[in-house]
Amino acid sequence: MTAAEVKAIAKDAHKVIRKLATADREVKAELYKALGVRATYFPADDTAELVAQPVCVSVRVGGPSRTISTREIRARVPLLLAG
Image 1 (tube, rainbow, N blue to C red):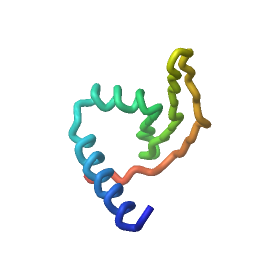
Image 2: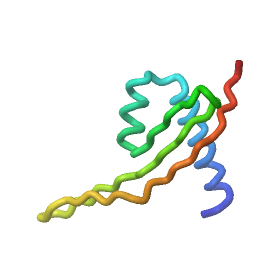
Image 3: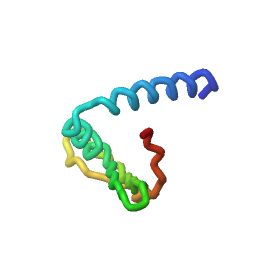
């Protein structure tokens, strides 16, 4: 992957993040659930815990599908909310 390709992906990701910021809460919740992402806000210390456990579904022609779960990734981060 070239530097230009990485920059293009990052630019597209930034557009998605901006759109998600103004999206309906229920739409975001459905998307995050489908992606295996969860966020919990802790107002006492203005942090959020982010948990991701992506799930892959593999479907075979003529055979059963199977779900593959990946390792859970967890991080607690400070929020920088504009006041």
